[in-house]
Image (tube, rainbow, N blue to C red; front, side, top):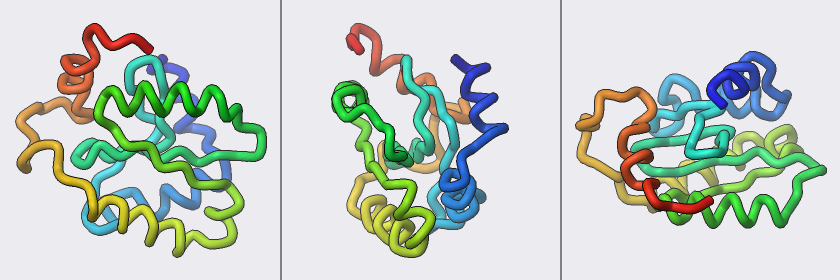
Amino acid sequence: MDGFARDMRKDPTEPEKRLWTRLSSSQLGGHKFRRQSVIGPFIADFFCPQKGLVIEVDGDTHDILADLKRDAAMNRLELKVLHVGNADVIRNLEGVCENILRTLELMPDRWASPHPNPSPEGEGLLEQHSKGTEF
């Protein structure tokens, strides 16, 4: 799974590239994001570990039933999933970023800063929390 995520980071879609230019380096309200982050059996397009926000950039060919199942699994891990469309990212990047920032501001922090887990992805917390969780 990690190799697949690494490959996806090397070859992002155009909307993912554009959104990453605004999410990288803590540019959006100081929130740190990871891209193509492995969470359980899934790869999240973007993930803010501090807030537990997963952002999925959806194209025209998304399987809605699969998305619902995946979102439910993420919710069981106490993660919130925000879906944004490719077209919205391309045509209205500023509006998408405002929506993401507004969502982040409404969410509580998952831990006090700095994070007690030195893992860069916060995997330790996800792994502990997901034990026994069926996807």
